[in-house]
Length: 153
Length: 77
Image 1 (tube, rainbow over the protein chains, first blue to last red):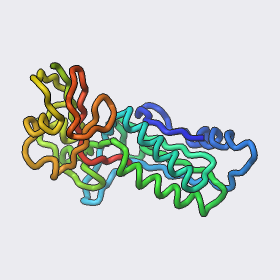
Image 2 (image 1 turned 120 degrees about the horizontal axis):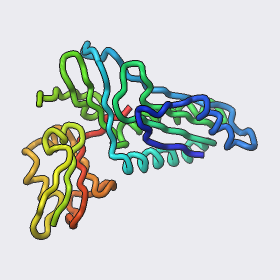
Image 3 (image 1 turned 90 degrees about the vertical axis):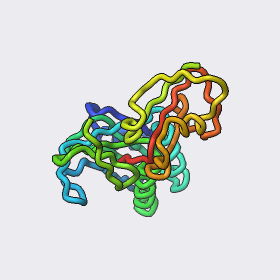
Image 4 (image 1 turned 180 degrees about the horizontal axis):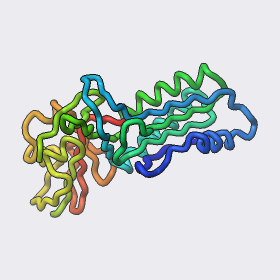
């Protein structure tokens, strides 16, 4: 089973029901391990800036296609039973969840490396963008870490 | 021909969030971007183009009604 989607910020990322869904697809009880990554909005970033809000947007169709591709490829590579990747867009406050990956497979030797690879790939391959709104101004995040201060409009 | 161009992230400040352009004759995405983007932004911020929601090459010939979405390096997570 694969679940890969862009979710709006008012849509909850419900981990328990997601795990139940993934387990429900395993009618032969082959799953021996489930690993989870939950990304949340940081309130304090590396350069000391205090974050008030992150505003995410995506090229939705391309982003969902890319999430599906990553899920399918990693499921195949690690022989997983099920993969879920959900990424929220819209305005999110510090502490709120942004990004949820759940992988279910035979055991830790499959699910841990698969989880890490999926998280890294989503950051690099999926057209999602964020604007960091901070006490000292707004910054576009370009690539993984570069911050470009937005000029006042 | 009329097309729409939308910038994402830092390109929304450079190009505008969504604007309509009226173009004449055959033109590729690369040709168009060389006219509407300041020099050097591609190497500075990265550049990925989507046409009607799909990733596209810069030598794609633009067609009537296309929606071009212009994006820098991705920053999800």
